[in-house]
Image (cartoon, rainbow, N blue to C red; front, side, top):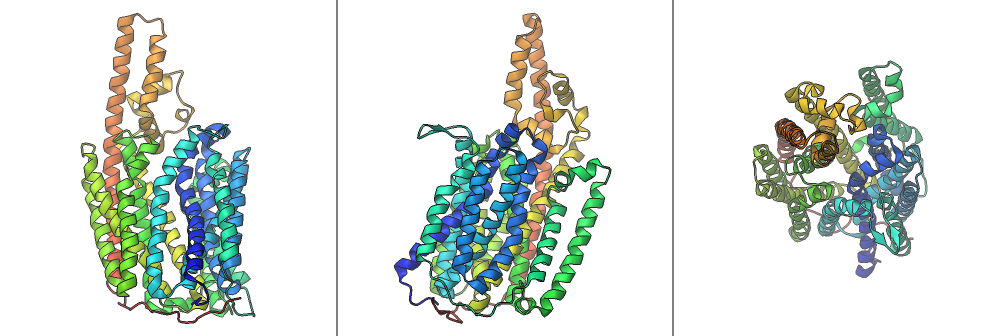
Length: 561
């Protein structure tokens, strides 16, 4: 451990690290409220998904690489480098003049985000003993909870246009706000974070790095926005299935090659010896399942709030406050208790049990359910997540020496990120497939036909109508009704005919909304069932985790440069 560092210096370092973590966590939620404004300005709705996928791709790929590099060259240069790249990427994103520029800037920004994520959790292991890490892991969990609430609120507020120092904000401020925070965080980290001495001989695993980058890229592109990324090939007659099949084959081949290379590498990116450790292997599987189940389920609750309760993006985010309150309460209190008891397994079991039961209870949600039902379920789901999530990293760090801490910790982050990515993509497919199965042919709905015949029809109604389009129409029902009413009243029809037309349009809209909401709710129940099942499997695996005691000192104390 870094015994030479004062408690005051450790606290300053952690505040700087948490500010960097806050930037990354905030970016994942704040961008959602700005997407509509971005696509409107650049008139590029088809590229909407790639704005998110570009960041997700590079951040996922950079996590294991940054973790290993930090073990070789130290946390400080990699962490500072991550903050610089992320901040510069944010600045470039805010200055974008085209969709291609924005996508490229988001990809660059993602590299910095992955570098920060890989080292923020690891640096706790450098500063504190395993037994002390619990309380700080809890604070990190609270940072994620706060960002999940602040992101949608701040993003919507900035995008709607506010007057700050004589300037009018827009969607670009969602990126530009990262710049001053990133500069401050980088300066504090550079000033107060000590450099840890590592082995002087380095043999970087370049081939392994290239193979894992290709493997992860293939996997993400196969499950997330494939039709958007490869739209050019699809337009030239290559089927989506053929593209996805090729990507899956490439993933399998490069993964097999990566495993073969790692067996012989002197300093592998991801040592296969880690999997000989029972706790590491189990935690990797658990975090994969946890990421897929929890994020996939909670992500669609905001849509439920919009579709059923008619909430706008800001209010839909506010309605998640009970979950964030439970998460923050459990994260902070669990960390304190673990630091005193020195045991972590009971909290993993209790957290998964609570989260599983809470997600399962969401299957009882109906369009007629009061918001209190959702709020109570979310609060206890947040408690379960807050108890379990920070402990997963803590358990892995307790198994390894300091020289392997970065690679081992980043591996946990990698599996969680992959679980979230793949899980969200699969559950999204379940949702849209279920909606279309219940609705039938969207273009045959009377309300949709009426909108297509209207001169005020939106551009997205001109092409194929899918489940996402139906949900978008439903959330815009108030503005659509207002436009239709204005159009009818400005027509040459007599007053009785105008009233009849408005009444007919309103009736069609209400019938459409009822069908979409019912189909959406039924499909959402399937998602909650799948999520609860995945959580149950994770819980059963967690029962077999060795009930180890957290060490009160570091296994291999590094020196200080």
